[in-house]
Image (cartoon, one colour):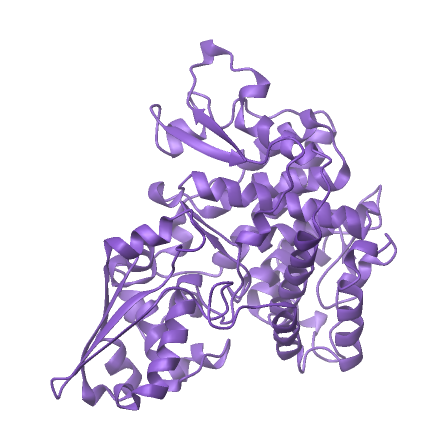
Length: 505
């Protein structure tokens, strides 16, 4: 990897193209280096993973709304259009990216990468796949595009913290998806450079969408970034230019949205001829919850088995979770969001409440993507009583491990201290989720397939499940005509398009 110094430059410097981060990203995207077999296999896993969480969301309100918007936009010229999860109808590629992006993100149940900032790199796939299908790309082309999208997003997340300045993490997704589409289409460096700049410029927004009363926009935000990436590529291909330099300019993103005029970042990117392997540093979710909750669900299940007495609030005086800065301040009591303790809060809010998630997993010894968030489950009297005894605090060592670039020590858990009313104290800790590559039960192809089968049950016919799995496992060999097979068709009666909400279009 080459470490690139990125800082603010006054306009009088007239910073050369080749010295700008957006151009260096574009150079990575145009590098014709082969995709390694290990990376290809992981791309297949993540396409399966995305499809799994998307089919489980087909009738949730945000997906129904986004799908109806997409269906109100016809297939555009110069291509065959793009599929929408669960149905046979197609839309234009940018609107299919929108609808499918919402479906993938809604349950907060797909892959993640956490470092200086946070990300769900699988959010790249809907936009890149939509463009691939519309333009007649092959499976091999798609694999190359996805490998680039993951590489750029992960590298940006390793180097540039957005959350510190309350900028939503999809600001790293827009440039990554634009670069991935550029690789897919074989565009030149200058065109990708312009698309990356436009995608960044149009996808910077505040993190209020993930604060307090969390709304349905949480699922729409990455889909919007993907849609903007598709449109940015289209404009760049038509010769339109972007703000330059987008990162380093004195009125640019770094100077006014991030660390300011004196900022200095070191961004790692693959050198010429170096394989794009960043997808291998990412990890998926066994449970439908914020990634920082994954390990805590696993630890809670363990405590449920080993100490069943802790499930009764009458036996518990307090529960203290010591964890990383992010877990404490974003999904813990350090956020100072009363909504995180509110039994009437939205699913999106409960998904970002470690006190709630730990409590329910502790009592149930399990976690379910629907049942664990049900209003009747959140409102259960003994749950509310125990939930309000759970607090978090930052532990500097867990924060250090959270930010470590050494994958072998990087951690997303912490320690828990449960004080019982009889005077006993139960302590335990966990570093990574069971499904993490370094966890107790790392996810491999079999687990991705099981996750897909489980979430597709009752939504897809068995024959459709088998057809999709047989198709996706041949991803690198798929022809342009076969690529449409990466979509799935819901079983009869599952999706009712006549029930779509009406809007402006």
